[in-house]
Image: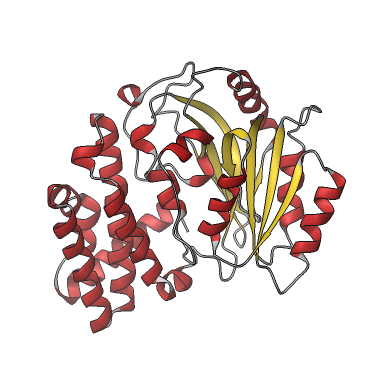
Length: 343
C-alpha cells in the first residue's frame, strides 16, 4: 500500500499542470511510497493526454495516467478514488500546487500512520489564496480552531471564523473512510468540492492539524469557477450541489457531535447564502423563483434543520425582502468579499 494518493483532475491543463505535478513528485522519499494519478478528463484542446503519459514514462513507479471521457471535476475525483492505492487520498487541482517545506512534517506524519491499524481519519493543513491579478496572497489557517500538538476529536475544536471553512484544499482523508461512506461526487457539475469536504465529516473521529501553508490555490483566472460572472452563469450547478448536500446528511440524526453539528449547520448556511446572493445578483423573476424554491426544498426535506439555517446571520442579511433589502444584502456580501478576500 502507498502512503498517499494524490489525484490531479486535468481538463485541457497542459499550460500549467507541470508545476502541480512537479510539486507532488518531489514528495516521494525515493521508495515510491506515494502515487500521483493524473486523471485526464477527456481533454481535447491541447496535449494534456500526452503530457500525462510523459510524466508516467519519467516516473513509472510514482505517476500514473488515467484517460477517461469527460465527466467533470467530480467524475475525475471519483475515478481517482476508485483507483487509489494510498492509505490517504488528496485531491490537487492541476493549476494549484503543494508547498514542499510545508509538506515535510505532514508527509512524515502520514508515513508514520500508514502502517497503523487505526490510522488518523483526517489530516488538515492551511491553504493560501494566490491572487493572480493582484499579486497578493491570503493565508487561511486554523490555529485558533484546532490543537496543534496532538491528535484530537470534534469535542476539542474551537470556533470557526467566517473565513475558516474546511475546503478541499485543506483536507487529506483516509482513503477507506471515503470508500466506507460510498462517496460519489455529482458528475458534469462544478462546486462538488463542497460535497467532498462536507459529506464524510460525521464519520471522522480522529483529526490531526498542521499549522503549515500546505496548499497553494490560484484564484482570479478568467473563467475560473469562482469568478463572479462565471458563478452567476453556473448558478444551477450551485443549486444542484446544495440540494445534494441537503439530501446527503441530516444534521439532527446523522451527526452525534454537538460542535460538528454546529459547524456543518454553518457550512450549509454558507451554501444557502451563496445561492441567495448570486440569484439576487441575477435579479430576474426566474432567479427569484429559484431562490424561493431552494429554501422550500430545505424546509421540506430537512424541516429540523430549516430554522437553524434560515436564521443564521449570513442568511438574515442576504434574504431581506424588497429591492432595498436586496441591495443591502449584496452590499454586505461585497464588503465581506473585500475583508476576507475569498474571490
